[in-house]
Each structure stands twice: as structure tokens, then as C-alpha cells.
Image (cartoon, rainbow, N blue to C red; front, side, top):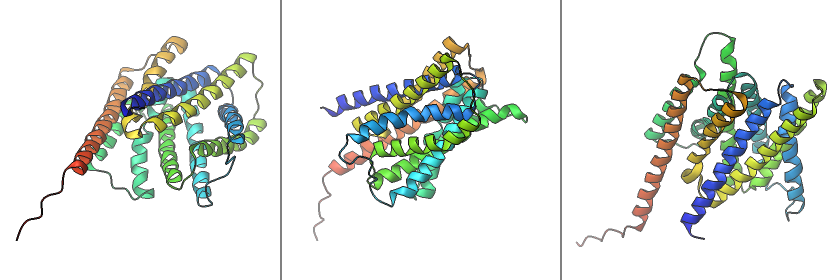
Length: 306
């Protein structure tokens, strides 16, 4: 298939992932006042079941690529688990699922910072400028105040930081030859096992509708994982990742129609700054990639005669 067609399909898949994760946030919110770990368990439990069935029919089954992947699996899963907890706390208390979504979408900017420490990468000056712009937008969304009402927004910000570190670990696992589906399974299984004891300890009986919302949240999370994996198989992340920010648009629409949530003007300004920084970073990488491709195609300079 032509590269442009592959990229188009990749964009459709990543838009599907954005919609699925926005729906997950909506369903978690609609589930109402339930213990946090009860929600976390259902978010990951269905993913474990679905991915386990797929792995059973794969040739390599549940085999991890090599022993050096295990510490990175544990770090990625532990940080990812904490990120889900913080994100769900933000969804339950921040008052707007679109605010929670945009704070979680700071993860690519956090990933740039973590790549400096873990991958020894040196970000270019424009990348650092876009990071600063994104965090300036986050300040608008958080609207910092010196009272307890700022905690949910800070939790959302922390969830984005955890996701950024988790994505950096996923890159390292990929470089070590680990399969993407195994990374998803390890994280989901890790989170399910860790959330099980506190869920049992603080179990709260659910109405049939609450159970439906949590099962739908798990289904949406699982669908999002498959969509985003399919997207990055079709096209490089640097070309399509910016479309993942459509999750904020989807979350705003869902929040308005189903939860009567209207983002505050300062939050909308923050959305614009963060999405603008993401688009700027995406355009910068595309321009740099095109320049590198032209440099490779350029014929070598003639050897000067003596």
C-alpha cells in the first residue's frame, strides 16, 4: 500500500484511539461515586482477558523478549499504574473530563524531559520551547490556587508525567525487541493484580448500571490500546501523534452532552496553547525529517583536484 494511504489509515486509527479514551473517561465519570481502585480494576481487567486470549493463539505466547526487559516492564507498569490512579482521581474530582484529558495529554512533553535522563537524548532548542509553552498552557488549565481544590488538577498533571515516563519505558522496551502486545499485557496484568486487594478491602456494591459503565470503560480502554497500536504500525509517531489531541475535543463534546460540563474560558485558553505547542512540535519534526531526507538524496560533493 502507498505510504500516503498507510498514513491516512494510521490517522483514522489514532482518531479512533482518541475517541475510545475519551469514552473511557466519560464512562468512569458516569460510574459515579465508587472506590478508586474498583474503577482501576475494571479498567484493566477486561484488557487482561482480551489480550491473554490473543497471546494464547500467538506463536510466542507469553514469552518476554529477554531478561533485560523485566526491570523496564516493572518500571513501566508501576509508573503506568500510578498514572491511571491519578488520572481517574482527576476525572472524579476535577469537574471536567476535557480538563482531565488535556492534562494527561502533556505526556509527550514529559517524555521529552525523561528521554534526556533515560535515553541520553539532547532535545533541540525548539523542542524545549514547545515544552515550556505546553506547561504554560497547563498552568491555565490548573488555574493554581492555594487551597484543596487544586489537588485534582495537580493529580491530572501528575498522571501526564507518569504517562510520559511510561512511554519512554515503552520506547526502551521496543529497542530491546519486546513485542507491543506483551508490553500491554504486562501492564494490564500488573495493574489488575495490584488493584485487586484494595478493591476487595474497600468494595462497594454497585447498581447494574454502574457495573455496565465500568465494563464499558474497560472495553473502551482495550479498544483504545488496539487502535493506537494499529496506528503506529501504519505510520511513524512523529507524523500522526498530534491527531491524538482530538481526545480533548471528543472529551469536551461528551462532557457537554452527557455531563453538562462547559470548560472555563481560562481552560479553553490552556487547551489552545497546549494543542498549539503539540502542532508546532509536530511541524518542526516533519520539517527536520524532510531536510534530512533531502540531505541523504543530495549527490556527494566532487573531490577537488590538486
